[in-house]
Length: 130
Image (cartoon, rainbow, N blue to C red; front, top):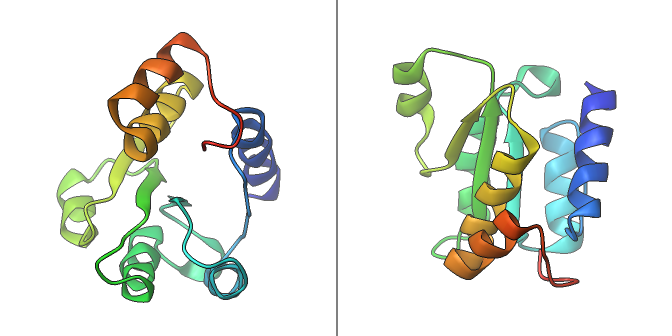
């Protein structure tokens, strides 16, 4: 949904992230070609065009072999076995609704390690680090 994507992009930007928001796999591939390897890929489980976000992350891993970006998938699905079976890249899975504080802490933990997690918990960030 475009409104949710835009709201999430605005929140990420407010947290200091450089954001390229796309709706579907062609948009992702175009952004990857233009921008190179991202520090984080945040994908919904159900993307426009019927693409599974976990499948997109698996294909994204082929673009940067041996140097995967951090990966998070958001889902409202409750079939944990099906999600685990498709999660071939070890993406962090967060179940909707995702509290903003949890998303922020997860991003910080994946992209900055423990120092980033502490900063996220305290609400402090360094400009340009996410």
